[in-house]
Image (cartoon, rainbow over all chains, first blue to last red; front, side, top):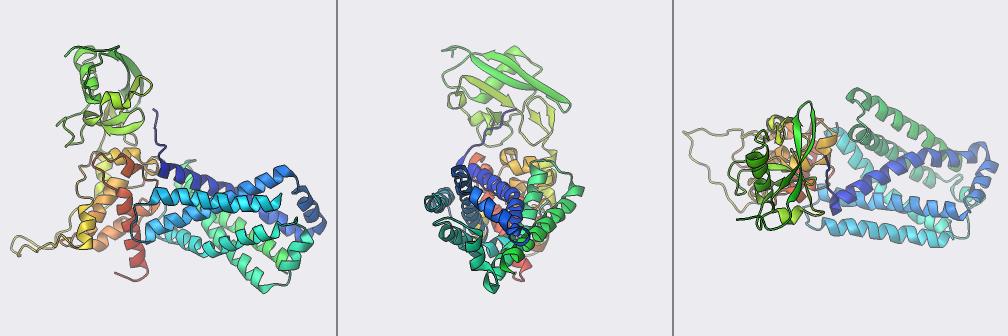
Length: 112
Length: 109
Length: 241
């Protein structure tokens, strides 16, 4: 049976959940790379050299976007739950995506 | 599934991470300029109590937050049985905590 | 009234708790036709074994709620031309509820959760007490009034993905009603309400995706009510009232 539900706040929920999932899966890898500073600094340096590749920079842009959109979307949810009710949630959701694009875009332009 | 206490733990860890995340994004934008090297990162963080506390707190908060978040996803999207939810959550939290604190130690010691 | 265009291509879910499938019917199209008209035509002229529910047929009782092209709606208030889209109507029983037969869903779990949420009035007076005045202008009464038009049709429950993913979750309607009673000056056990909505199926599972508010034909907002419950339970936990 088909279920049709792609309205804006539902899409915001899916984006928030997928970004959280992606970040949670990324973290162990991130922690591992950083801990190379302890066990094998040369490996860390060669990883950082690898991260100069354009594709990696695009991936980093993606990660910064996911982190920012998850954080700002999360702030919208905290406002929904703890501050007096506002009717502007679609605007806030759009704002979260906008700010996330701005920050990750700034990162990307400084990375290339 | 998520009762009041797990909910509060997730929301409070989220609130703790607001300034930490904004700071982290700012650091990333600053640090990525003109390339990134191990020496540059470690030059900033090694021996720094501030960064140890900053990222140490971040690791603790994200371990709590991600463990609870993954618990919800495991149940709602993947149908993980109720009996497995707590062990799964604790395993994720412990794993992230250990790996995370180790990496904080690696760059600030 | 006579048929004015090509017949409608309608797929209706047939079956029961053990399973089922969609069955296709060709239904005459009329100028002003609701989905309930379509279902009724099928039962009256094509297949008398089709099971479905309706009562008032004017958008007051909620009995005719079904999934129409994947969206839960009151079929008596859904014009075919508004939803026909690609030219096909797909009609199924309400999501997230067991099926009794064909388009009739079993509403028992919905009402069981209503009771489990303590969404029932807790008396604080009896017939010998004076009737307490209820001030309609207080914030609490306004919060309650925003949710009391619920007719328990089950559409929000069918629309909610958290209900779909979490069998314990009490659901938007039950939680909204609990919130209206929490804000009711006459309710005698607000603590019991907060306890009931703080368990593993409670308000804290809501992800605020808002499908409930989007789908409610009475334009109610269970998501806002649930946010209120979250605030109230957190405040109590922190030591407030």
